[in-house]
Length: 318
Image (cartoon, rainbow, N blue to C red):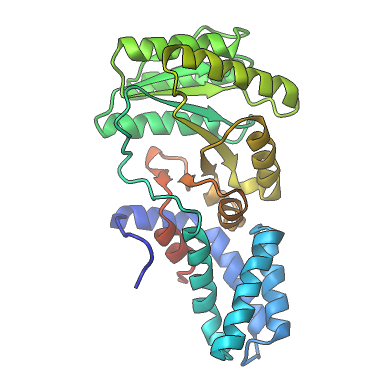
């Protein structure tokens, strides 16, 4: 019996399968070579599996945890054949993701809070602003009243890009142009969200990780001014990571979780990489729920992260 609830449509599942194709092809090609000519799960097979997991950017700590669990099962249940390895590995990764204690998002639901303030953080180039645009389109399509705040004011392209997304999906954008303090935009965005009775206000922020002290100060100020309008806001701080960067995504997650309280993750660009294992490692190591994954360029390719469907897609061979 599955430990997850199943609610993906056939189309969503097909998109996910296609988006993870590079990751799982690379993964299973390596496993196939590792067990070629072997009939039982022995130390050599487990050593090879450990190398494959690390190479797939699952991360060293999470890899060690998975290998230890498999060793315990092999010893306890007397699993010996390599044909059983896929199933055991699949079950242990599914269990690991379930331990994150996060509920899968469904249909872009929102808590009974109005407006719900979502602060989005991440370094330049990870797809942060594009993810915000896609989220705006998703929430708008689900009947929500959405407002965007262009507070990544140190990068002209980010402001212009968010304004274009707002135009494209018919969602208002609060913008003050470049070189205005992000907190000013955040303050006015929440104020406008209250005035317009918006369901959700999504605020883009600067991603200058190379100046960590400035970044921390900026985010602290943004939090402070938002609370002037809504004391319990922001209700969510989402970190956007580029899955194709592998271990660099771990480093970014580590630095941003030091700079601010990150409460959810969006992992993008999984369709163009063989590093899909990064989702497993980041979810395990940071114990922050992965809420969305990007598996393509289209709006519909930003998907809610469903643990069961991810594991099933990752382990489905053509």
